[in-house]
Image 1 (cartoon, rainbow over the protein chains, first blue to last red):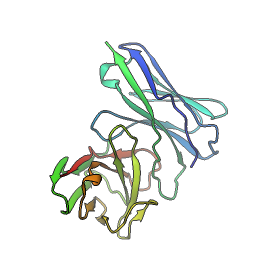
Image 2 (cartoon, rainbow over the protein chains, first blue to last red):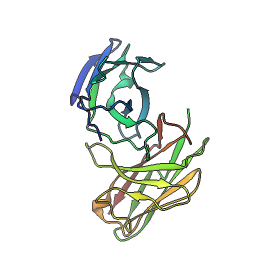
Image 3 (spheres, rainbow over the protein chains, first blue to last red):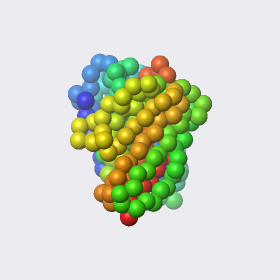
Image 4 (cartoon, each protein chain N blue to C red):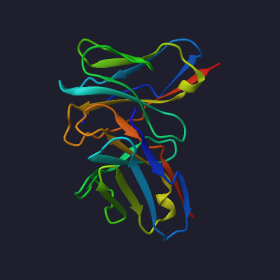
Length: 112
Length: 116
């Protein structure tokens, strides 16, 4: 499975934008880029995913580099409830199992 | 969005007993469900893939006789930890994907198992 590299932790101030980077230099042409987040003592929550084009939804935006070797999850205005571990994961398109392999993720702290 | 529910959310048992955790997709059909385990301050580790109507596929190092998985219907998968020991204490999480979808996985709330 292609691997991703994320910073262990990041800090943000409340109501400011947050850019969470992810490197995936060995990504294949059919790998989707998924982002999930996990709040303490909860199961992960889907945030966003994309293949080549930038994506926006109500939670966040995903900016994908032109060569697809990196991506950035953008939270436009961080709130205290956004404090979580954010996982960047590659998933084969329509993979035979469809499972997700989680790395260590980035622990985001949000200061009031 | 689709909802996946786990039960129980917390369970405490004595060493040597067996514990069953249920994972239900409440408003969609899931031919495949996944079981993860998470130890404190660590990431999720995939344990097995549960396929409706067939045997589960276990990841390397996961004992299939200890972690029994049954996926009897399109909305229910169960994980039974047999003869539990304190080292099995962990946070167990299931997930499911909407049938025929290649998009997001929906995760349950997790079940925290403590073996005394």
